[in-house]
Length: 329
Image (cartoon, rainbow, N blue to C red; front, side, top):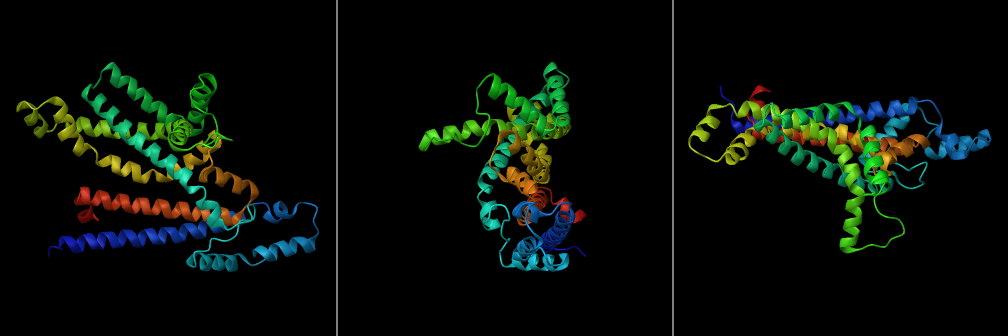
């Protein structure tokens, strides 16, 4: 008996949604215990090393650190359901306020790097596929190897040294120039100049991945019979490549962009540290150094939800592009 398309599609989406929710719950539990079982005591960071035991006990009671781990986990889950992520031990303000103040910077960095990587990677892949085994092809293949080999931390330092310190083309640190009240185009120009190097740092690895996969797909598609037929009809080569072949070679790009969100977020931690960029990555390192449990758990929760949502969107988008996925699963 053939299952109706709409029912099959709904079952696929429901199953993916349930899997995403379960994944988020498991990640919350795992991250909670990993953070709390790590060596060190945040009380000493808050109260200093010279306090007495009564003062330490008061601090633990104030922030609920004197409760058993399972009790703390239950309180944490209950708070999440109420939309309360807790109170920052280090910043002395609600965790949601601390995190949400950093989201725009990281979101701008990640989205701009994805845009640069997607456009740049696809264009380079198409051009090298059209010139297979040429010097241009071999040079860009070496770039792919380099992009896969170097970590974002090293790429960031190289770009910083050359373009910021040596050539002086871009600012070395921050998101905006200090002590300047800029508005309008001046503000956007300053924001863009600070964004270029961090964006390229994150985009290089993405460009290498997208280019490698899209190139392989393009070479396969360009040898299909319908491409040969289109060329035989006298259709211009650029239209054949970009209008016919590229459309069918773009499926892997959707998967890469969605599945690499976790890598982008981890790369943002190092990238924001290198460039002093005030986003979630830098906040993560600050919270780790201060052993700020509520902020760390809030960050892990946010990142887990973001990765799960993007994976769900990727699976859904890919299933609509290629319906065979719904039937195979």
